[in-house]
Image 1 (cartoon, rainbow, N blue to C red):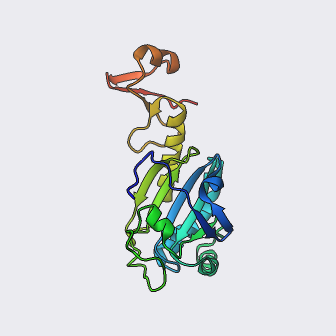
Image 2 (cartoon, one colour):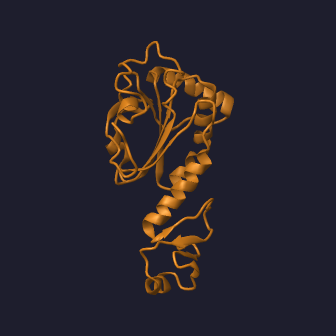
Image 3 (cartoon, helix red, strand yellow):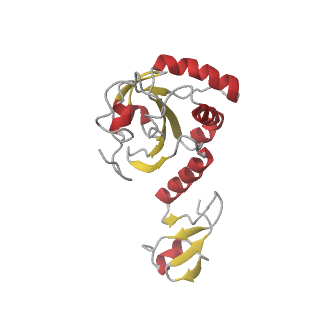
Length: 218
């Protein structure tokens, strides 16, 4: 199944390191970051999971929760978590999905439908496409999708930056420019008339009729 931005995130029931969950129920009224891994005990993923454990409070501050996925059993995840804490200096407190039947990987279009139905015998290379990040809103719709190669560690500070942008632009009629960071000027969306902009964003700057900037609201 092909997935696009603003599609409803496919729901599923799965075993995790914190028990069985219904994904949509688990999300509740928060934002969710689902990030996947091709196999346990892989070096790049070890660093990623450790870094996410370190910055989890930043996501919590933004009303967002983390959930990992790896195409291996939950029991292996527990052993891997011990390695992650030892080598990365942070304990993994968020749940990790055990996708041993490849169901979630297929549901999220990370593996083809004919990939089989078991993780047994599969390697990190055969699961190479299970390297995605999905940001899902409280409305259960996909807001962002990113897929990385196995040899390139993900930049999770970028996920925080994008989350800041999405939460801001969901609240105000603005967009964020290239390389925007929290506190910097934003763009007024074209749907806002100059008259409305003057009321909502007094003192805004017009660079071009289609490019108007203002201080970050809120």
